[in-house]
View 1 (cartoon, rainbow over the protein chains, first blue to last red):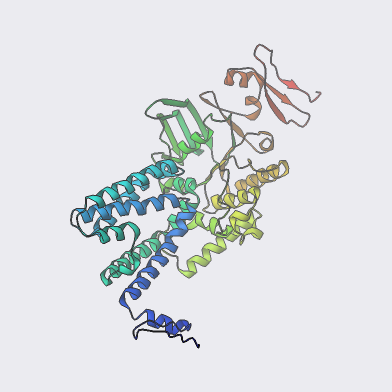
View 2 (cartoon, rainbow over the protein chains, first blue to last red; view 1 turned 120 degrees about the horizontal axis):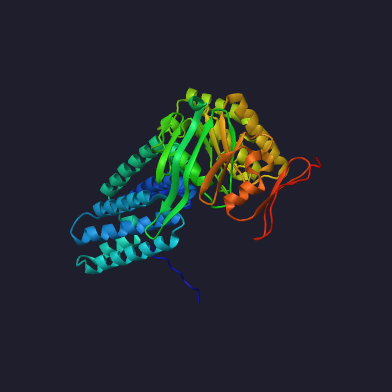
Length: 190
Length: 279
């Protein structure tokens, strides 16, 4: 009448020990996890630096819209057989420059930004639907795939992160002045 | 007198143009302001007081006419001239979540244009300089408080300190009294007058209420109805003058302390200066 329960564990199954250090060690044995952590850390640091100014300038929606512009650029690049990184950089930087040229006209224009955002998202989806390659690649563009980051992607993220950090170090004071007090900064010729 | 003038405008016209319309704000303004003068800039909402400041700062370009500030013709907001100008713009709110301390805001008046990080010794010197300026405006206790946590009056002192910290020759103050109560209005005006006199600074101050300015101003620039007129306060604040300026009946009343009330009179009603001093 005794009930015998058996647990079958495959030999290579990951065992969590509830010891955070050994668990981390186990996790980081895998390259994809290591890359995810590396890229995630770089992005977190850069986002922290940039985010301070974005919140100060109250342009978080514009920054959000830029990520969608980047998606469209990446999708367009994939469609014409280029590395999506090129499209992403080209579109986001052009978008940011355009917003910079418009200056104050962007402020509080959430309706217009939202319209551009929706248009860009639609355009990106159009590019993806026209793309005849693997669907997974297209979906990873759309939703992001942190576990699919290669070591070269980490390197690109690191270089971009370093450039952004150096630019912020150089322009920190004028950027802070303009973000806090645009009228006075403008009067001082910034 | 001409040699001493720090601001000169001749045949100055200003306006905004858009695709749909061209709006003239004022035309043919001629005035000259001497070093050390304290000038009140008055006029109704939307008359062009802030526009006048923006022209003098080189942020806006005039439609026609010429402006000379500190001996240089205003082309754009170039630093050579504008670094010698302290400017406190009109503002309604400051980001209340901003955790930047008041001292840092003042410090931006010194190093806001500098690229890169300051050396520790430079940074220390700037902080001392900024703190000294906060002492002058009586806000040393606020130095390490976040700007967002300060009241409107306290913020105005911080912005005044920021405008003064670069040792300006001219101070443009756009409605600095807007968020102050009557007592603080008078205190603030006296503070500006004292600091300006000590440093021989020319002050242009936009206000809606002339009364706190009456004891300190030398002259008044009145912007209304597309015109800019300059004169002594006694000359400008008369019923006849303002009626002509507004092109509508206006009455100027004075109480026994010389304080002024400007009242829009009904069309057709007669207007004259009421003097209730009993003399």
